[in-house]
Image (cartoon, rainbow, N blue to C red; front, side, top):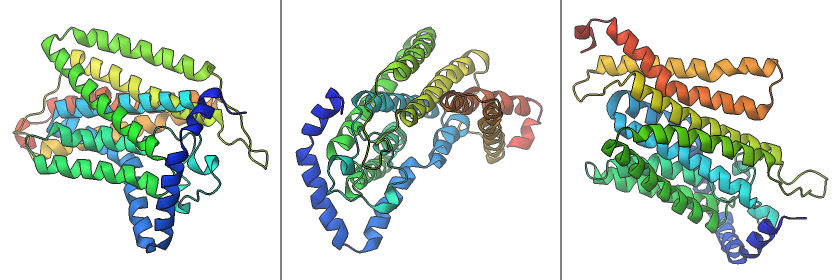
Amino acid sequence: MLSITAKSFERSCFVDISYLLWLQGIREVLPSFIESFFALVSAIAASSALVVLPCLLYWCLDKRGGEFLLFSFSMGSMCNQLIKNTVCAYRPWIRSPDIHPAKGSLAEATGYSFPSGHTQSAVTLIGASGWRYRKKWPALNVACWVFVLLVAFSRNFLGVHTPQDVIVALIESIAIIAASTALLNGIDEDEDRDNIVCVAGLIFTFLYIAYIALKPYPLDYDASGALLVDPFDMQIDCFKSAGVFSGAVLGWYLERHLIGFEVTPKMGWKRVALRFGVGIAVVAVLHLAPRVLLLIGIPETWYELIKNFFTVFGAAFVSPLAFTAVEHRVNPLALR
């Protein structure tokens, strides 16, 4: 049987399903390249290549902007997964057999539906970038938010999310952007607040993991006897986000207190290339290193937490430690 939360949630989705059926009818008569376009938009929003953006900003172009994206994305990912695993809402085609999602989008449309993870990623990375530079480059801000809205619409057009999935993801993620802005501004006013942020963030991560691991999940099966959604898979996604968030918080905190590297407008392209090259190399090594844990039989949930922690902690702390050490050993004139 569905959980009480999921039942209540599904009863509220009649209008949403009707809207998806209307879009489905349009999608089926349009040229196939339209569907391909929206599938590409969705794929970009979920691409791991997007992590290059906060890294490039943080290391080379705008350190504060990189910190902002780091907090925005990591907090957004964790909050989105928390809501997903609390509500446990099924995908549209599970709620209604009349929904036939675009086949090419099914591979990434796994797990619970509410809220949309693609929309959350688009807002907290691309939308947040536009917001960060809205005064300096207003046209960039407009372009970023147009992309965000295209991502949100694409999830409906492809039939993999209801409107309320993407609307709530938009609202939630915009709130995260505001919270990240307030948090960093508050630390500017009182530097000692970073101690509170670090401790509170790590405590929240611990409580989050305990909640995700111990809470009950609906166990519903399809006609073949397979689980509609495997709770273990959803726990893996949550452990991933816990690794991202804890790595971001601890790495950011240690960098502030132990390194304090600077990004200046006068940095030459050679120095930028050095930082980016060293930084990416370090992140790649730290991302791959935890694979050895699989050989000793560590549970996949903890493996994903550790892997994502190492990756983001590497970007926030270990990479700056590495490239500043290299810079101290290189003739400054050679980096201009």
